[in-house]
Each structure stands twice: as structure tokens, then as C-alpha cells.
Image (cartoon, rainbow, N blue to C red; front, side):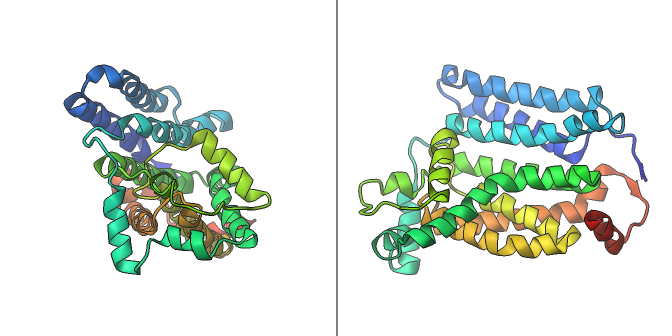
Length: 305
């Protein structure tokens, strides 16, 4: 049982704060401001939605309204991602890939994506890593819907809080350190195509239809995949172990497919882990809620029953 008089959950508050912060940042640094009208309207609307939904849709009325109350946040995360394309150059006029390339070349002796292009591309490997990369697009809806069906609302709320924190930090870093990614930076230097059978083509289709140029540092894909995996390990251990090799393949697939640099992956992992542990440590304090004691064993039993 849960006792609370606060209608705003932590992920609501993060969405509201992020929207306000982006509006203020655009008003201060966005020049000419006329180029940022769409972004200002978007953040005003998303902040307004996060303010209104907890008031208009209190928790516990019925399953349909509970679904809307919780899942609206996941939809807004997608809106925030698309909006990063318009805020990429709020502070800087150009991408800074040359810095990352110099750093990675100094560390590895070569730029990893160029090395892969010249020596390691094979259709079977391409397909394996493309499959793992494509799994990212299924992780979030499958994870959330499975938890909702099992009525594990508290796990959903904690995940959405960790996800909101992860996305907010990642999207702010997008314009603090704009990186376009190797597929753009090295567009004239690759000598081979990344051939595959099915999943490589599916990944290319999704990227062509929804990716933003830039927004590479950090890899928000791997950051969120890490958050989901950690929640699975805590509450549904078998699925955590299943996700581990997929996430390893996803991490490799991000730079194998030329979407990210290796450094983007490391930073994404760090952000995802930090968000997960911060939420697990602070969630009760943030909500001010009193929970009856439920053992991890009982929760896992409920999840797999």
C-alpha cells in the first residue's frame, strides 16, 4: 500500500524542470530567437502537459487512465529527442568531432570506426550487431507494457524517473558538446558498405526516418538500455541476464554501425548507471511516500507469476 498526498511524481518534476530549463536557455542563448519558436512552443507544451496530467488524471481511477498517467512521459521523451535537432547549436556553431577523433586516435592508435571499416566488416557480424542495436527500439515498450500488465506501477515510476534523468542529462550534453557522429564526420573516408540481411536494413530504415544529425555525446541508446537492464536485474533477474549480451552487442553496434564513437558509449553507460543508482537511493525521499515492506523475493515472485 502507498500513502501520498503529492500528485506530482519525480519524473513529472524532472520533465517540468527540464522544459523550464530549456526555455530559459533558449531565451538567453538562442539568437536569433525567431529560429527557436518551434522549440520554445514544444517545451512550453511538454511542461504544460506534465503540469496538467497529474491534476487531471489522479492515480488509481482505472487501468486505462493509469496507463495514460504513467506512459505519457515515455512519449514526451521521444518529443524531447526530436527537439534536440533544433537546439544543437545553442552555444556552439560547429560540431566538435575532431576533438573526439584526436582523443580516440591517441588512445587506440587508430579511429575504431575506420579500423572496423577497413578490416572487420562481415555480413554475419554486421547482422548480429544490427540485431542488438534494433532491440533498443523494442526494449522500452516491451519493458513498460510487461510491467503494466503485471501491475508493477512502482517499478514503472522508478524506471520513468531514471529514464527522465538520463534523457535530460544526455540531451543537455548534446548542445554542450555537439557531436555529429562518425557516419557524418567520416562520410568521405569509408571505403566499404555495412552489408546485412534483415536487421541492418531495419536499422537503416529507422535511422533514416527518425535520427537527428548530431546528438551523439553521450549515447542515450546505451544509457537507457543500461537503466532497463539494471531494473531487470533487480526485479526480474532472468531477463537481466538475457539483456546483458544484447546490451553488449548494442554497445558495439553503436560504433560498428558508425552511429557513435566509442567514447559516446562509455559516457552513456556511466550516465545510465548513475541515474539508476541515484533513483534507487533517493526515490523514497523524493516522493515522501511510506511503503509497506515488500521483500525482493516477493516482488520477483509476483513478476514471474
